[in-house]
Length: 143
Image 1 (cartoon, rainbow, N blue to C red):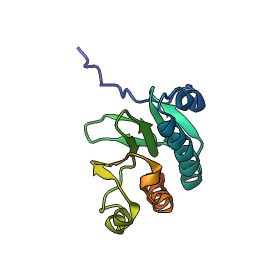
Image 2 (cartoon, rainbow, N blue to C red; image 1 turned 30 degrees about the vertical axis):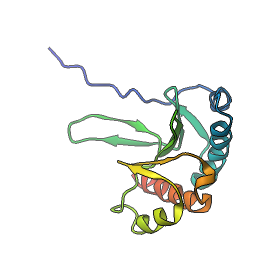
Image 3 (tube, rainbow, N blue to C red; image 1 turned 135 degrees about the vertical axis):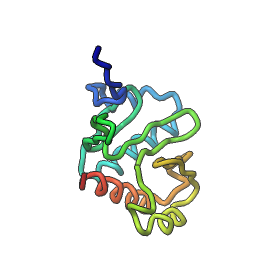
Image 4 (cartoon, rainbow, N blue to C red; image 1 turned 45 degrees about the vertical axis):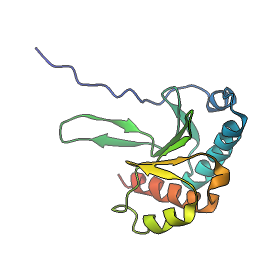
């Protein structure tokens, strides 16, 4: 009996990015998300596309693990969450030699494994954020 491979739940969809963002009941987060779309579009050169029901992605790359699992993911993406805006950048000091320096200049944020969390665009230097996003997109365009 063949085993069924796990399927990636995060896939590109035809959901309207604009409709998704306009549906937000938090006015500040909606405004920040709209501004972030423009910033990420400029930094990556890609148009936004919904991935799943709540992730706005830019570009894509194909991955394949040693286990045989493979799929496609956005090169960079973000999701407006109830507590913050989560940016999925997949960056580490290993892939960006001056990441720590950039993060020190960014402003109020926290990080997790490959993620950057901000409460508001007003809390960060958007020029530094644009640089971080561009470096992340560049990393994934090399795959």
